[in-house]
Length: 287
Image (cartoon, rainbow, N blue to C red; front, side, top):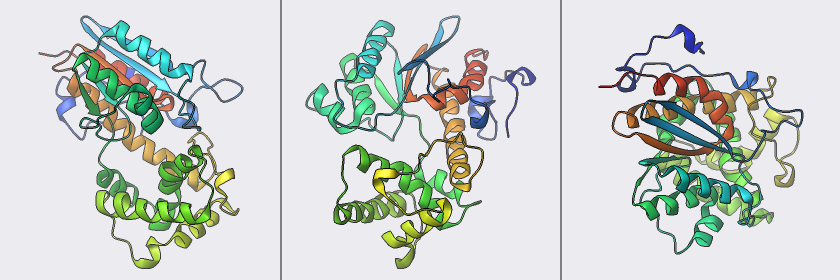
């Protein structure tokens, strides 16, 4: 469900109300250029009202983990130190306790997420996870989609694209990483109960192929972008991102109660869809 922010009253209690729906733009309606790209990487927008400012660095995630000299990282770092935030919000889980030996180590292991952590460490400020817990997101998705459909999308988005970025193509290694991902992320962290059959790599592949009507090939993965209006695979992706968008905006809303300057590093699609929600929370009257 989507709302035009002009039709919503700014309620200072909304940040503490988990039922409040923030206004967002449908992924189908997001405006990109003729090549399906944003004007820049990172794409940076600022939201300011009085002494409150949110800087959102929307990034296009790199597909090659070895590209640590990419100018995207330099631009994020420059903006971070020019802004000097009170707190930062990151994508991809709780990184507050992660330790890196150097910037190169952070970039090679975790890209912009690792960079965000070492930048925050340099100013001795906190990093806050802008994503919901896996178990919350997964249970929400499984209200609508089967386990096979759910795995086809989540495994592709959160494991297979990463393996492709690491240039891992050996079938034995892919299956080994898959088994660890299912055990540690889907079952232990996500709380999803799977039978032995549902845990198997063949179960994932068969559901991927059924959804997309073509063989699984890690060198030719289906993009997990949510812009294509047709196809259940993309529809699952939109549902996942919409759950995450609401959580991200709520996180920013709460942080604005006690912080004046918030720095966000997240996928650029989230910036585009969350823009009206962020405009709502920056304009909220706070005690």
